[in-house]
Length: 366
Ligand SMILES: Nc1ncnc2c1ncn2[C@@H]1O[C@H](COP(=O)(O)OP(=O)(O)OP(=O)(O)O)[C@@H](O)[C@H]1O
Ligand SMILES: [Mg+2]
Image: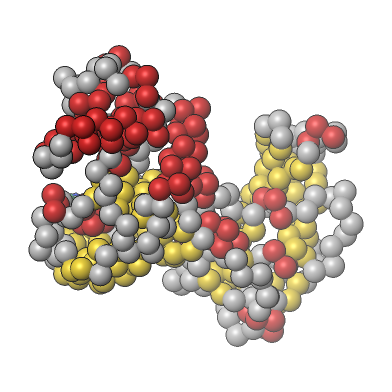
């Protein structure tokens, strides 16, 4: 088990800067996730840590040792890929034994370690089967057992769940997390699925265009997104782009004037608010809120919750979360509605560079 340190890593391909000056520290035993849209550099970064890619500049340290010039097979890592990548002609146990055989471990030791790894991934009864006799989820469990059986210092996983159906994804996701906890192995996990990242990680690194936007715990990422990109990529967020700011921080938005003194001196601001923070009209009139009148253009009922999408004029649509929808009469499309966006729940960003503007609130640090 080891700490991973990345220092100023950059990597370019013709016409694209895949990694742009990445600085990261992944702590020993941590479940660390690289999250971002397609093409943001997640796989490139993971392969750099594994040693399959050579970076143009910067350094990779694993367990305090500089491994820039250490080939992949000597870096002591386990790797799990999206497409399972297990050998089709080898049985489950021979697949898992592979790494131990190439390391010339004695036979009894191999048998014992393979059996233990298969038990860990709940494939104890499937040792003799061939991969084509397994479901996708089981094949991915084989890949996981094969990566773990060698007791690697770090475990790297590149979208290991993306070929599985929704139910299996959740099942294997929870199993991977539990397994990682019990073994305490430093794990770097790649996904473009923000919900998966929130559920599975100790910390998440949000990337875009080869750069790091934010590194934070799931709760902090959700509560205090550092950039407007993180705000819109993680969870659902209403973004009120590029709003005009008057003297003293007065917002010319909504029915009544609303002042955000920390915005004084700025001409424009991008505001954002989560659907679950939007207050619907049966709540009392909010004093410190942007109050908007609109027309519901869509009602989505999803059982545990529902959503209204409310057109508020000027192309502004606000998504509002309806708590416990089965306990109330839902509005219908076409209904007029008044919503309040409480100032205390607003996020603010600089429209020029997307960076977070501190509104002077004391949010609990998580
Ligand atoms: N071998 C390569 N040759 C040229 N360009 C590459 C190569 N590998 C990656 N790239 C480019 O580098 C950028 C980052 O690619 P990368 O595969 O790391 O993205 P990703 O975040 O893993 O995306 P995805 O979610 O689609 O897997 C992309 O613009 C990609 O086209
Ligand atoms: Mg990728």
